[in-house]
Structures are given as structure tokens and as C-alpha cells.
Image (cartoon, rainbow, N blue to C red):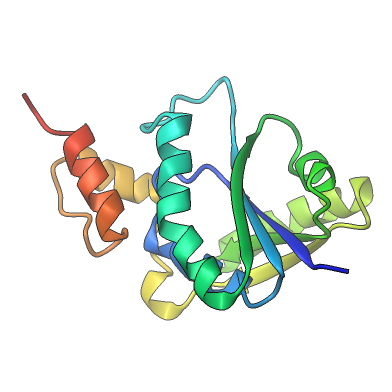
Length: 166
């Protein structure tokens, strides 16, 4: 039976932290599905289609190199519902620090109560990417700072183009 993993997030934008998680995740499964959560109350910097393009562009080569099937999609429901819809039995979650662990343990517990067949796997961030968050990357980019140390080159270029002042 193939091991199918779901890695949910907003990916607004894709960061080197996300990249780090994917490097680890593809070693744990046969198929990795990255799903972008769509929340009507949130106003992301990048449109859904742009985020899907970034996710595919950045993560698909990593999965291919590892021999892992890759797909990306969106979901506007509970992540455990999305996992079930895709046949995933593994939920991938990245952890940067103890604060993330506390929050993610609560979510994992609730997810387990709703879908006991979906197992949460925590992937600890590698030391160089621990401080990186998409929120901080957006703030730095919006204020004209250099985000190239924190995101893949393609994403840095997309941020630069999106935020170019006329």
C-alpha cells in the first residue's frame, strides 16, 4: 500500500523553511500532496493560482529526485477532510520551535479525534531555516528588504515583480 502524505499550508509565499520540510517529507512517503488552504476571510499576497505555480515549481523537482510522486491542490475544508479525500494517512507538519510544537500538538490531537487513520508526522526545521516564517518574509518584502536568503530564487523574483513600485 503506498504511503500518501498531505502537507497543508498557506504557502504565501513558499519559503526555504517549506523547502526544508519537503526535503524531509519526500523520504517518508511514496506520494506527497501539498495543499493550499483557502480561507475566505484572509487576503493573501499571492493569488491561489500563483501559489500553486510556486509550490509546483519549487517542490516538484525535489519529489522527482527522491522518486516520490508529487501533486499540489487546494482545500477549503478541514485538513483531515482533505487528507481523507486524497487517501492520505500521513499529515506532514513542520516545527520551528517549542511554540510551534504546543500549537501543532493541539491540532494533531483534534485531527486524531476526527480522523484516527491520519497520523501527524512532525518534521523539525533544520537550524538555518528555524527563524523563517512566511509572515516575516512578506513583511520584509513589503518594506523593500532583501528576502533572497529566506526564499528560493524563483520566489524572490516573483516577490520582486509583485511588489515593484511603478
